Length: 348
Image (cartoon, rainbow, N blue to C red; front, side):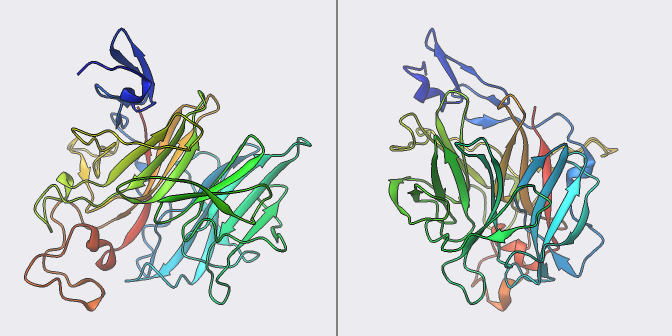
């Protein structure tokens, strides 16, 4: 139906003459769909070495520093997506790569660090890594450096308890904010790494949000969600894997598109090296990171996905050695029996 305000356009566009004028790459009658490029560069199929079948990755944050892209990705043993054996630091001349990987030894290893680049009141730029709940340190910590290459040092007294697991930190107008895996609460702190207090709650359907503020000052969160709109266990391309929440009042009150619900994307992408020109469907897409160009326009989506399990799912698998009962295992559970990896998708 016609829009009444920019909220009806997901805050991804402007309501003009009762119609939504969407900001690219958002499309749809209510600007709720994230449009993928017609053909995404095939280098984004797996940013970490796809031939290393002894290990899994499950996405991580990427930042730009002086013309070089940097990424931090936990490395997991094959068959697992927890108990990482190391934290990889990757560098590349462009987002799709080629990526070179080394061990980031200055930072505690945790299941999914956050990264935040911010410029303080003295015009000093800081590169920070947010580590939640590493082994033996339940409070987590924030590490800082003057460049993405390091050296990173722990900020004494910092903690990431405001972020839960899988931190998504934000710096806006001189204040720090953070949310985490469950994504239902945004915490705030005047100084980096706490002490934290509750700022807002997000009624949402999902986990592992990517948090940002757009060029108009609106707040957004992109989630992985696992609603099963298709039969559980197969036809994974029909599954819901994403949701989007937005706020027009500095992140205080949030909403999602409803009646009907709109998911920003499905787990299907067209790679530019596919000779049959057939889109590739993944069993699931999770841990989203939305990346922006210098003008603040969304340019790429980073996700985690099973590299070797697609639309067919894994109906006969028993992830984590647990029975799925009398039903096929869900598409989302396929990640536990797959060669899991890190993808980068170009946006339209």
